Length: 397
Image (cartoon, rainbow, N blue to C red; front, side):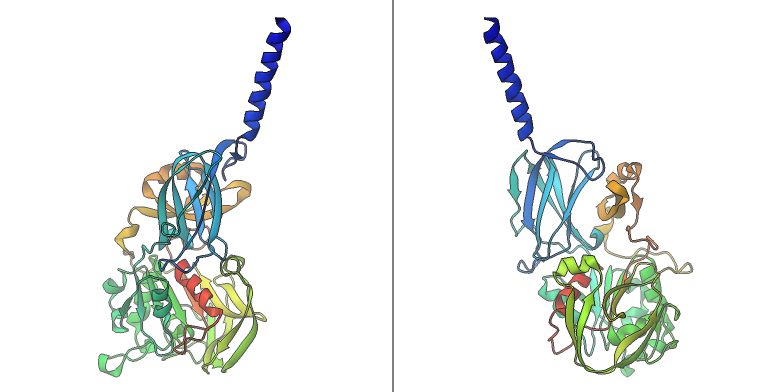
Protein backbone atom coordinates (compact mmCIF):
# COMPACT_ATOMS: atom_id res chain seq x y z
CA UNK A 1 0.00 0.00 0.00
CA UNK A 2 2.87 2.41 0.89
CA UNK A 3 4.60 1.83 -2.47
CA UNK A 4 1.33 2.37 -4.33
CA UNK A 5 0.70 5.67 -2.47
CA UNK A 6 4.25 6.88 -3.22
CA UNK A 7 3.76 6.07 -6.90
CA UNK A 8 0.60 8.22 -6.99
CA UNK A 9 2.39 11.17 -5.37
CA UNK A 10 5.27 10.94 -7.83
CA UNK A 11 2.83 10.79 -10.76
CA UNK A 12 0.93 13.87 -9.59
CA UNK A 13 4.19 15.78 -9.02
CA UNK A 14 5.41 14.88 -12.52
CA UNK A 15 2.09 15.96 -14.05
CA UNK A 16 2.25 19.33 -12.30
CA UNK A 17 5.78 19.95 -13.57
CA UNK A 18 4.81 19.06 -17.15
CA UNK A 19 1.73 21.32 -17.05
CA UNK A 20 3.81 24.23 -15.79
CA UNK A 21 6.35 23.64 -18.51
CA UNK A 22 3.66 24.06 -21.17
CA UNK A 23 2.58 27.49 -19.94
CA UNK A 24 3.35 30.43 -22.17
CA UNK A 25 5.57 32.95 -20.41
CA UNK A 26 6.43 36.50 -21.33
CA UNK A 27 7.82 39.56 -19.60
CA UNK A 28 6.41 43.06 -19.81
CA UNK A 29 8.54 45.95 -21.01
CA UNK A 30 8.77 47.33 -17.49
CA UNK A 31 9.61 44.42 -15.19
CA UNK A 32 11.69 41.53 -16.55
CA UNK A 33 11.31 39.55 -13.30
CA UNK A 34 7.52 39.25 -13.63
CA UNK A 35 6.18 36.08 -15.27
CA UNK A 36 2.74 36.34 -16.85
CA UNK A 37 0.61 34.00 -18.91
CA UNK A 38 0.24 35.19 -22.49
CA UNK A 39 -1.45 34.63 -25.77
CA UNK A 40 -0.53 36.03 -29.16
CA UNK A 41 -2.13 38.64 -31.39
CA UNK A 42 -1.29 38.71 -35.09
CA UNK A 43 -2.42 40.86 -37.97
CA UNK A 44 -1.55 43.38 -40.65
CA UNK A 45 -1.74 47.15 -40.24
CA UNK A 46 -3.46 48.76 -43.20
CA UNK A 47 -4.14 52.30 -44.35
CA UNK A 48 -7.75 53.38 -44.41
CA UNK A 49 -7.98 52.43 -48.10
CA UNK A 50 -7.73 48.77 -47.05
CA UNK A 51 -5.02 47.93 -49.58
CA UNK A 52 -1.86 49.77 -48.50
CA UNK A 53 0.08 48.00 -45.69
CA UNK A 54 1.63 50.31 -43.12
CA UNK A 55 5.13 49.60 -41.82
CA UNK A 56 6.65 51.10 -38.71
CA UNK A 57 3.40 51.32 -36.73
CA UNK A 58 3.67 50.60 -33.02
CA UNK A 59 1.27 47.95 -31.73
CA UNK A 60 0.82 47.63 -27.98
CA UNK A 61 -1.39 46.66 -25.05
CA UNK A 62 -1.38 48.03 -21.52
CA UNK A 63 -2.11 45.76 -18.55
CA UNK A 64 -3.90 46.67 -15.30
CA UNK A 65 -0.62 47.93 -13.83
CA UNK A 66 0.00 50.22 -16.84
CA UNK A 67 2.78 47.98 -18.12
CA UNK A 68 3.16 48.09 -21.87
CA UNK A 69 3.72 45.16 -24.25
CA UNK A 70 4.69 46.36 -27.70
CA UNK A 71 6.01 45.51 -31.15
CA UNK A 72 6.21 47.15 -34.59
CA UNK A 73 4.71 46.29 -37.96
CA UNK A 74 7.21 45.31 -40.65
CA UNK A 75 7.40 46.88 -44.10
CA UNK A 76 4.49 44.66 -45.22
CA UNK A 77 2.36 45.75 -42.27
CA UNK A 78 2.61 42.39 -40.47
CA UNK A 79 2.92 42.13 -36.69
CA UNK A 80 2.90 39.50 -33.94
CA UNK A 81 2.55 40.48 -30.29
CA UNK A 82 2.70 38.30 -27.15
CA UNK A 83 0.47 39.89 -24.53
CA UNK A 84 -1.09 38.89 -21.18
CA UNK A 85 -4.30 36.88 -21.18
CA UNK A 86 -7.56 38.62 -20.37
CA UNK A 87 -9.62 41.53 -21.67
CA UNK A 88 -7.51 44.33 -23.08
CA UNK A 89 -7.31 46.93 -25.84
CA UNK A 90 -4.98 46.58 -28.81
CA UNK A 91 -3.53 49.97 -29.77
CA UNK A 92 -2.16 50.71 -33.25
CA UNK A 93 -0.41 54.05 -33.72
CA UNK A 94 2.00 55.91 -35.98
CA UNK A 95 3.93 59.08 -35.23
CA UNK A 96 3.41 58.73 -31.50
CA UNK A 97 -0.36 58.36 -31.91
CA UNK A 98 -1.31 62.02 -31.92
CA UNK A 99 -2.74 62.01 -35.44
CA UNK A 100 -3.31 58.38 -36.44
CA UNK A 101 -4.41 55.66 -34.04
CA UNK A 102 -6.79 52.73 -33.73
CA UNK A 103 -8.08 50.92 -30.62
CA UNK A 104 -9.47 47.37 -30.80
CA UNK A 105 -11.09 45.69 -27.75
CA UNK A 106 -9.89 42.11 -27.55
CA UNK A 107 -9.86 39.07 -25.25
CA UNK A 108 -6.53 37.27 -25.12
CA UNK A 109 -6.46 33.60 -24.12
CA UNK A 110 -3.43 31.76 -22.78
CA UNK A 111 -1.41 29.91 -25.44
CA UNK A 112 -3.86 30.89 -28.18
CA UNK A 113 -3.26 33.08 -31.25
CA UNK A 114 -5.83 35.63 -32.33
CA UNK A 115 -5.69 36.96 -35.88
CA UNK A 116 -7.10 40.46 -36.30
CA UNK A 117 -9.03 40.88 -39.59
CA UNK A 118 -7.49 43.50 -41.87
CA UNK A 119 -10.82 45.32 -41.86
CA UNK A 120 -10.32 46.03 -38.14
CA UNK A 121 -6.61 46.88 -38.16
CA UNK A 122 -6.93 49.91 -40.42
CA UNK A 123 -5.11 52.95 -39.12
CA UNK A 124 -7.67 55.62 -38.30
CA UNK A 125 -7.16 59.33 -38.92
CA UNK A 126 -7.95 61.40 -35.84
CA UNK A 127 -6.11 64.54 -36.97
CA UNK A 128 -7.62 67.32 -39.01
CA UNK A 129 -5.32 67.97 -41.95
CA UNK A 130 -5.13 70.85 -44.43
CA UNK A 131 -3.04 71.69 -47.47
CA UNK A 132 -2.23 74.73 -49.56
CA UNK A 133 -2.45 73.89 -53.25
CA UNK A 134 0.81 74.13 -55.19
CA UNK A 135 1.93 74.54 -58.78
CA UNK A 136 4.41 71.64 -58.85
CA UNK A 137 3.36 69.46 -55.94
CA UNK A 138 0.22 67.49 -55.05
CA UNK A 139 0.72 65.86 -51.66
CA UNK A 140 -3.07 65.77 -51.35
CA UNK A 141 -3.15 63.05 -54.03
CA UNK A 142 -1.12 60.72 -51.79
CA UNK A 143 -3.28 61.55 -48.78
CA UNK A 144 -6.43 60.70 -50.71
CA UNK A 145 -4.94 57.52 -52.17
CA UNK A 146 -4.26 56.27 -48.63
CA UNK A 147 -7.93 56.77 -47.81
CA UNK A 148 -7.51 59.86 -45.66
CA UNK A 149 -8.82 63.41 -46.01
CA UNK A 150 -7.27 66.86 -46.06
CA UNK A 151 -9.04 70.18 -46.52
CA UNK A 152 -7.78 72.69 -49.05
CA UNK A 153 -7.01 76.08 -47.55
CA UNK A 154 -5.64 79.11 -49.34
CA UNK A 155 -2.54 81.19 -48.89
CA UNK A 156 -4.79 83.89 -47.50
CA UNK A 157 -6.09 81.48 -44.85
CA UNK A 158 -2.56 81.32 -43.43
CA UNK A 159 -3.08 84.94 -42.32
CA UNK A 160 -5.95 83.84 -40.07
CA UNK A 161 -4.59 82.18 -36.92
CA UNK A 162 -8.05 81.06 -35.78
CA UNK A 163 -8.54 79.36 -39.14
CA UNK A 164 -5.31 77.36 -39.14
CA UNK A 165 -5.41 76.56 -35.40
CA UNK A 166 -8.29 74.14 -36.00
CA UNK A 167 -5.90 71.82 -37.87
CA UNK A 168 -3.30 69.41 -36.52
CA UNK A 169 -1.24 69.23 -39.72
CA UNK A 170 -0.73 71.65 -42.60
CA UNK A 171 0.95 70.61 -45.87
CA UNK A 172 2.64 73.40 -47.84
CA UNK A 173 3.03 72.29 -51.43
CA UNK A 174 5.87 73.43 -53.65
CA UNK A 175 4.72 76.46 -55.64
CA UNK A 176 1.96 77.48 -53.22
CA UNK A 177 1.58 81.23 -52.78
CA UNK A 178 -0.88 84.09 -52.93
CA UNK A 179 -2.03 85.92 -56.05
CA UNK A 180 -2.08 89.53 -57.10
CA UNK A 181 -5.87 89.44 -56.88
CA UNK A 182 -5.83 88.44 -53.21
CA UNK A 183 -3.11 90.85 -52.10
CA UNK A 184 0.24 89.44 -51.05
CA UNK A 185 1.85 87.21 -53.68
CA UNK A 186 4.80 85.78 -51.77
CA UNK A 187 5.67 84.75 -48.20
CA UNK A 188 8.65 87.10 -47.89
CA UNK A 189 6.47 90.19 -47.88
CA UNK A 190 3.94 88.87 -45.42
CA UNK A 191 5.18 88.75 -41.82
CA UNK A 192 1.71 87.68 -40.61
CA UNK A 193 2.02 84.34 -42.41
CA UNK A 194 5.34 83.64 -40.70
CA UNK A 195 4.05 84.73 -37.30
CA UNK A 196 1.01 82.46 -37.59
CA UNK A 197 3.01 79.45 -38.74
CA UNK A 198 5.44 79.97 -35.87
CA UNK A 199 2.57 80.11 -33.35
CA UNK A 200 0.95 77.05 -34.95
CA UNK A 201 4.07 74.88 -34.57
CA UNK A 202 5.00 76.23 -31.14
CA UNK A 203 1.58 75.11 -29.86
CA UNK A 204 1.78 71.59 -31.25
CA UNK A 205 0.74 71.88 -34.90
CA UNK A 206 2.89 70.09 -37.48
CA UNK A 207 4.06 71.30 -40.89
CA UNK A 208 5.29 69.61 -44.05
CA UNK A 209 6.87 71.73 -46.75
CA UNK A 210 8.65 70.68 -49.92
CA UNK A 211 11.17 72.19 -52.32
CA UNK A 212 10.20 75.82 -53.08
CA UNK A 213 7.91 75.89 -50.03
CA UNK A 214 11.12 76.36 -48.05
CA UNK A 215 10.23 80.07 -48.34
CA UNK A 216 7.59 79.50 -45.66
CA UNK A 217 10.30 78.27 -43.28
CA UNK A 218 13.41 80.36 -43.91
CA UNK A 219 12.21 83.18 -46.14
CA UNK A 220 12.38 84.15 -49.76
CA UNK A 221 9.97 85.18 -52.44
CA UNK A 222 8.13 82.36 -54.19
CA UNK A 223 11.15 80.24 -53.28
CA UNK A 224 14.49 80.58 -51.49
CA UNK A 225 17.29 81.87 -53.70
CA UNK A 226 19.93 82.70 -51.11
CA UNK A 227 20.91 82.15 -47.52
CA UNK A 228 19.68 84.83 -45.11
CA UNK A 229 16.66 85.49 -47.33
CA UNK A 230 14.13 88.01 -45.94
CA UNK A 231 11.27 86.58 -43.91
CA UNK A 232 10.83 83.11 -42.47
CA UNK A 233 10.37 81.88 -38.91
CA UNK A 234 13.28 79.41 -38.80
CA UNK A 235 16.49 81.23 -37.87
CA UNK A 236 19.00 81.50 -40.71
CA UNK A 237 21.71 79.81 -38.66
CA UNK A 238 19.53 76.68 -38.42
CA UNK A 239 18.97 76.13 -42.14
CA UNK A 240 20.31 77.52 -45.41
CA UNK A 241 18.95 76.62 -48.86
CA UNK A 242 19.51 77.81 -52.43
CA UNK A 243 17.59 76.92 -55.58
CA UNK A 244 20.65 75.58 -57.38
CA UNK A 245 19.49 72.00 -58.00
CA UNK A 246 19.42 70.88 -61.64
CA UNK A 247 17.11 68.38 -63.26
CA UNK A 248 18.26 64.77 -63.42
CA UNK A 249 18.36 61.50 -61.51
CA UNK A 250 19.96 61.48 -58.07
CA UNK A 251 21.27 57.91 -57.81
CA UNK A 252 22.39 56.04 -54.72
CA UNK A 253 20.49 58.11 -52.16
CA UNK A 254 20.48 56.67 -48.63
CA UNK A 255 17.67 56.37 -46.11
CA UNK A 256 19.80 57.19 -43.09
CA UNK A 257 17.05 56.92 -40.47
CA UNK A 258 16.73 53.30 -39.34
CA UNK A 259 13.07 53.55 -38.32
CA UNK A 260 12.12 54.98 -41.70
CA UNK A 261 14.15 52.32 -43.54
CA UNK A 262 12.46 49.53 -41.56
CA UNK A 263 9.02 51.00 -42.20
CA UNK A 264 9.41 51.28 -45.97
CA UNK A 265 11.56 48.18 -46.48
CA UNK A 266 14.59 49.68 -48.24
CA UNK A 267 17.52 51.96 -47.44
CA UNK A 268 18.71 53.08 -50.88
CA UNK A 269 16.86 54.71 -53.74
CA UNK A 270 17.18 56.90 -56.81
CA UNK A 271 15.26 60.19 -56.78
CA UNK A 272 14.10 61.80 -60.00
CA UNK A 273 14.46 65.57 -59.87
CA UNK A 274 12.71 66.27 -63.14
CA UNK A 275 12.30 69.99 -62.39
CA UNK A 276 15.27 72.34 -62.35
CA UNK A 277 16.12 74.94 -59.72
CA UNK A 278 15.11 72.75 -56.81
CA UNK A 279 16.19 73.77 -53.34
CA UNK A 280 19.53 72.32 -52.24
CA UNK A 281 20.34 72.37 -48.53
CA UNK A 282 23.60 74.27 -48.11
CA UNK A 283 23.95 74.11 -44.34
CA UNK A 284 21.90 73.00 -41.34
CA UNK A 285 22.22 72.70 -37.58
CA UNK A 286 22.39 68.96 -36.70
CA UNK A 287 21.27 69.65 -33.13
CA UNK A 288 18.03 71.09 -34.51
CA UNK A 289 17.41 68.94 -37.60
CA UNK A 290 17.53 65.17 -38.03
CA UNK A 291 18.51 63.91 -41.49
CA UNK A 292 16.30 61.10 -42.78
CA UNK A 293 17.40 60.85 -46.44
CA UNK A 294 20.71 61.97 -47.92
CA UNK A 295 23.16 61.53 -50.77
CA UNK A 296 26.87 61.60 -49.93
CA UNK A 297 26.16 63.63 -46.76
CA UNK A 298 23.90 66.07 -48.61
CA UNK A 299 20.55 66.21 -46.74
CA UNK A 300 17.50 65.61 -48.94
CA UNK A 301 14.90 65.12 -46.21
CA UNK A 302 15.02 66.57 -42.69
CA UNK A 303 12.73 66.95 -39.69
CA UNK A 304 12.69 68.58 -36.29
CA UNK A 305 10.65 68.56 -33.11
CA UNK A 306 12.84 71.18 -31.46
CA UNK A 307 11.14 74.38 -32.56
CA UNK A 308 10.39 76.90 -29.82
CA UNK A 309 9.02 80.42 -29.70
CA UNK A 310 8.82 81.75 -26.15
CA UNK A 311 7.00 84.90 -27.31
CA UNK A 312 4.25 83.08 -29.19
CA UNK A 313 0.80 83.21 -27.57
CA UNK A 314 -0.40 79.94 -26.05
CA UNK A 315 -3.46 78.81 -27.97
CA UNK A 316 -5.20 75.46 -28.45
CA UNK A 317 -4.18 73.82 -31.72
CA UNK A 318 -5.75 70.71 -33.20
CA UNK A 319 -9.00 68.82 -33.13
CA UNK A 320 -11.35 67.87 -30.31
CA UNK A 321 -10.58 64.19 -31.04
CA UNK A 322 -7.34 64.68 -29.15
CA UNK A 323 -8.82 66.35 -26.06
CA UNK A 324 -8.95 63.17 -23.97
CA UNK A 325 -5.56 61.88 -25.11
CA UNK A 326 -1.99 62.83 -24.38
CA UNK A 327 1.36 61.80 -25.78
CA UNK A 328 3.91 60.43 -23.34
CA UNK A 329 7.39 58.95 -23.22
CA UNK A 330 6.95 55.51 -21.67
CA UNK A 331 10.00 54.02 -19.93
CA UNK A 332 10.85 50.40 -20.66
CA UNK A 333 13.68 48.10 -19.67
CA UNK A 334 17.40 48.85 -20.09
CA UNK A 335 16.82 52.58 -19.97
CA UNK A 336 15.06 52.74 -23.34
CA UNK A 337 11.68 54.31 -24.02
CA UNK A 338 8.83 54.53 -26.54
CA UNK A 339 6.46 57.32 -27.53
CA UNK A 340 2.76 56.46 -27.26
CA UNK A 341 -0.53 58.31 -26.89
CA UNK A 342 -2.76 57.33 -23.97
CA UNK A 343 -6.10 58.33 -22.47
CA UNK A 344 -5.54 61.18 -20.04
CA UNK A 345 -7.41 59.26 -17.34
CA UNK A 346 -4.51 56.84 -16.97
CA UNK A 347 -1.77 59.48 -16.83
CA UNK A 348 -1.36 59.47 -13.03
CA UNK A 349 -0.42 55.78 -13.02
CA UNK A 350 2.01 56.23 -15.91
CA UNK A 351 3.57 59.23 -14.19
CA UNK A 352 4.07 57.19 -11.03
CA UNK A 353 5.84 54.60 -13.18
CA UNK A 354 8.34 57.26 -14.29
CA UNK A 355 6.88 58.22 -17.66
CA UNK A 356 7.04 61.82 -18.84
CA UNK A 357 4.78 64.04 -20.93
CA UNK A 358 5.68 64.66 -24.54
CA UNK A 359 7.54 62.49 -27.07
CA UNK A 360 10.80 60.71 -26.29
CA UNK A 361 12.63 62.42 -29.14
CA UNK A 362 13.55 65.39 -26.98
CA UNK A 363 13.11 69.02 -27.83
CA UNK A 364 10.11 71.01 -26.74
CA UNK A 365 7.27 68.68 -25.77
CA UNK A 366 4.74 71.37 -26.70
CA UNK A 367 6.08 71.75 -30.23
CA UNK A 368 4.82 70.02 -33.31
CA UNK A 369 7.06 68.53 -35.97
CA UNK A 370 8.41 70.14 -39.13
CA UNK A 371 9.31 67.94 -42.10
CA UNK A 372 11.07 69.30 -45.16
CA UNK A 373 11.89 67.42 -48.37
CA UNK A 374 13.83 68.70 -51.36
CA UNK A 375 11.80 66.21 -53.47
CA UNK A 376 8.04 66.00 -53.68
CA UNK A 377 4.95 64.55 -55.35
CA UNK A 378 5.29 66.65 -58.47
CA UNK A 379 2.57 67.02 -61.07
CA UNK A 380 3.95 64.31 -63.36
CA UNK A 381 3.39 61.76 -60.58
CA UNK A 382 6.45 59.64 -61.51
CA UNK A 383 8.13 59.59 -58.10
CA UNK A 384 9.04 55.92 -57.66
CA UNK A 385 10.42 55.00 -54.23
CA UNK A 386 9.90 58.55 -52.98
CA UNK A 387 6.18 57.76 -52.72
CA UNK A 388 6.40 55.40 -49.70
CA UNK A 389 8.70 57.94 -48.06
CA UNK A 390 6.06 60.64 -48.47
CA UNK A 391 3.43 58.22 -47.17
CA UNK A 392 5.58 57.80 -44.08
CA UNK A 393 5.76 61.57 -43.68
CA UNK A 394 1.98 61.88 -43.81
CA UNK A 395 1.47 59.21 -41.14
CA UNK A 396 4.26 60.37 -38.81
CA UNK A 397 3.80 64.12 -38.63
